[in-house]
Image 1 (cartoon, rainbow, N blue to C red):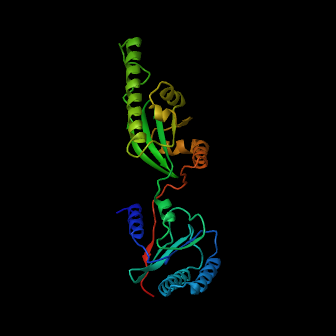
Image 2: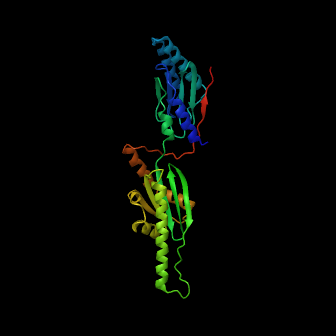
Amino acid sequence: MSQTYDLREQIEQLEALTGDGTELVTVTVPNSKSLGSIRERIAQEYASAENIKSDQTRDHVQQALKRVQRILRRYERTPENGLVVYAGVVGGELISTTFDDLPTPVAESTYRCDDHFDLSPLNEAVTPNETFGLIVIERGGAAIGRLVGERIIPIRTFESQVMGKSRAGGQSAQRFERDRERQVHEFFQQVGDIATDAFTGDEGTVTGLVVGGTLATAKRFVSDGYLDHRLRNRLLGTYSVEYATVQGLDQLVKKADKQLLDAEQRKATSGLMSSTHGFEMAIWLRMDPMM
């Protein structure tokens, strides 16, 4: 089972939990926030809870806050991507859950006391990152992949059947050029079809696309209409890349770094989700025992 799936499963479990009143506590701590200040805030909230009129609600909130205090004391410093703590009484049992190694940074410091947990920090962690299509194409082959955040995911590499520029003995130059052009057309068409399936299929159309390879070949592939119109409208540029391999995909990303970054920034400022981390998740989930 993947760690991404584990986190989604835990989100579903937490979503199903409700308190009898505003008794479930959510605390988020970004890396920029000192744990000392958060501990002070929780101590103040514990003292303020004395003013809650309902005996049950007051008792449950203070139990949850005392659990949060115990959890926070375990840490000498704020984890690299921050900390998210959930605590509360559900069905008469005090439970708590701690996330201290999320794949994306916690954005802000929050304290919430409600009849449900605030799961937005976890939902942000499993939201797909911006995705870009990568195509490297040259006469001898092609490589297709995705850039998800900072992670390159190869999809397919393959060789072409396009003949070299030297014709076989006895073959006329015109016939050779016709055969070679037919092979180039078929190869470009194959690459275009695979790119369409990869970048507009079940996973959705990519945010942007970059094409690399022998520069003349890459530009001809684009200008001669082998890209699906949805991809052509998202083309960020063409770049000179040496190898139509996985190594070439990496080189393409480095060459197109500025354009890819600008595309992410444009997406973010237009109000759409933007994220900079392609991720292999590392989630530590701890259901703390009664204390």
